[in-house]
Length: 112
Image 1 (spheres, rainbow, N blue to C red):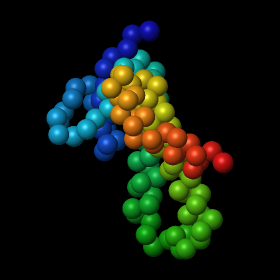
Image 2: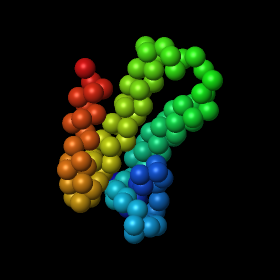
Image 3: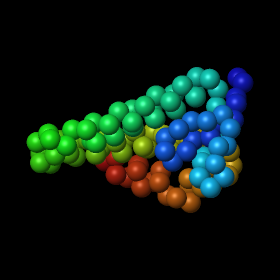
């Protein structure tokens, strides 16, 4: 399986080269299939963000059950992205994610 190096930015972008030294990005090594999986998760997150930003007239914001459902859905997608980045990450990327504690925190919140 051929793996290429990619960089995932905090903005949810996937690049083949490191684009900004000031922007912390996660370096991963992924096959074409794994890259497509990461892109699907990023798109899932973007779609939820879009709904939240553009649906501010909805009364669902006052429905706690609905809000919790959206929150859990978003947490699940974030967990999936970090899990994939950790799985495919370089040793430095794995270390960064482990130090952040994001996997255990998200796993605790979304997998009850």
